[in-house]
Image (cartoon, rainbow, N blue to C red; front, side, top):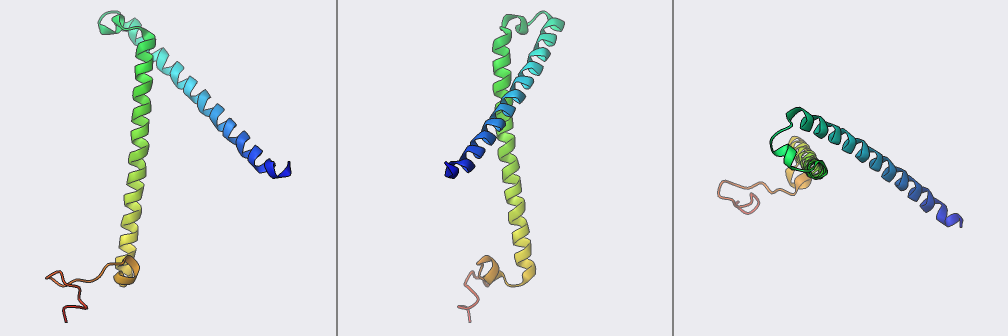
Length: 117
């Protein structure tokens, strides 16, 4: 039983995170729903009046989820490229490019310097 205690603690933490995410999702949905209602009431005519509010809400939430997903990927890629740039700069600054980066110094002809002698 004692062996299961860390796993039980982790499961309760995951449940708390899931509950928090669900609460944030509900808050966002209510905010978007309110904005859609206010927008529909102010215009009154046009395509908004022809589309059910629940359909507009679901499409808006899908769009938000997609944009957030892409934003997270772009943020991850930007950090990855930034890290690679720092590693490259540190490698060049060290003066030991072959050891550090696995790069061989080449001559203009593209032949490694060790073989061009």
